[in-house]
Amino acid sequence: MPNPFYDRDIVSIRDFAKDDLEFVFDTTDSISRLKHSQRGELGKGRTLGYIFYEPSTRTRMSFEAAMASLGGSSIGISDLKSSSVEKGESLADTIRVIDLYSDVILLRHPLDGSSRFAAELSQNPIINAGSGSEEHPTQALLDLYTILKEKGKIDGLSVAIVGDLKYGRTVYSLLYGLANYKVEVHLVSPPTLRIRKESLYEIQDKLKIKEHSKLDEVLPETDVIYVTRIQRERFPDVQEYEKVKGTYTIDENTLAKSKSDIAVMHPLPRVDEISQSIDHTKNAIYFKQASYGKELRAALLALMLNENLSR
Ligand code: CP
Image (cartoon, rainbow, N blue to C red; front, side):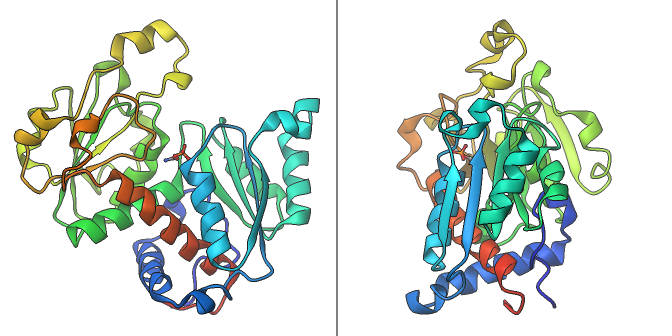
């Protein structure tokens, strides 16, 4: 199978078929097994350029660490105040300039459609590091990879997605990714934070989806619980946020009502939706998930930069 990621934009996980997803998962396995010296050839002399219009810890740092592990380097802007965006430079001009200095561009921006827009302007491939409430495709790739590694399969699982389903962009990318598999999905949220129905049209026939507001009713059957933060920054009215914050907290009581091997995932950062008291349990795999992020992103960069890379 030819490398489907070579020189290609990663704007939406919807742009990739199941074979493509499995290609990146297999490559992640093989890259993780490579000797340091071999791995260090895959990005040698290449540059990742990034700009983050919104804060990030994991996405930016895991991409930087991934690029370094391939022998490449990273340059970028994470503090807009120290960039010419502060002087009024447009997104279009900013992308055109980063494109001059980089081989791959990583963009996080608060507007839906921002990465697609950037991809139309840029000669080099764009990676969407989070666009508004729309998508976060590399998060979904690492989420699916985590499920595969930790549960040994994706088909046949029951996945509960909990929290802010209206504004949480990781939720949409994950659902589009899960639509390639035979899974049962339970969407658990306060009524005001239900999934945006228009975003589900193309996948509603592929996934078995049920909506809930009570977490307890799904726990006994759930294999993977994917918890999300209530996205305070995306609420038009802070009073609406105050009404729903803290609706769900995953703690020892939650685990007691669940299957003994339930996997608790979270894209992080968490606020109060997962109690630190369960961090030590075998069920809590959210930091492992963040760790898989570096390996998966290294594989993705290697594939984007090396046409002849095979799994
Ligand atoms: N999961 C995630 O996107 O984390 P950051 O916002 O820290 O990048």
